[in-house]
Length: 239
Image (tube, rainbow, N blue to C red; front, side, top):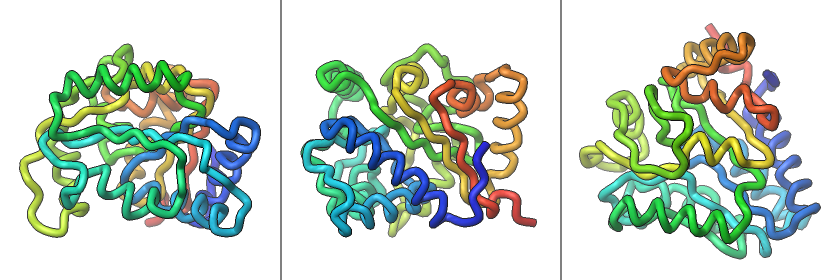
């Protein structure tokens, strides 16, 4: 586990590593979670872009998940969040975002075809959920799953309310990349930077230390992968 004093230092660390990946492979395929855990990374990556130290014009961005039943431009949609907080400034040459209004099974097929065409992920940045999820891989998930349609845990739906300006619609299902997709990625990051993630972080740390990942804490499967970095800020352990 890597400890950082604040969001800014965590964001810079990951952004610098992503920039090095892109320097070595300009057409890299990157995936960063839609959510507040990613704000430090979004800010640091876009700062590098503004300064001319990072050029993403040949790179591709892949949105890792989306709520079923929400248009991409809807308030609270993952796609809308990513565009507003990251993609509009980042300048990726190509972007894949799930369509929440399309048939979800067909979206999984489309995503897997896209990944195959692009050779898989060069880096994925996951935010850890309060229940230990990553993307929409909720407790009880089969770690052998690739892109799939997921039932959303009640706590995930409740936490997601903060992303909606008005009352959110019922959030029951989503489409998401799976643990198996992460296993094939060249580089992985797990991020936690708020005190409400402490319980999940401590569970993940215990399971990873014993090399006993468990589906009750999906992020633990990522934590034990050799290409993964577990990045947390001091705020996680604040009293």
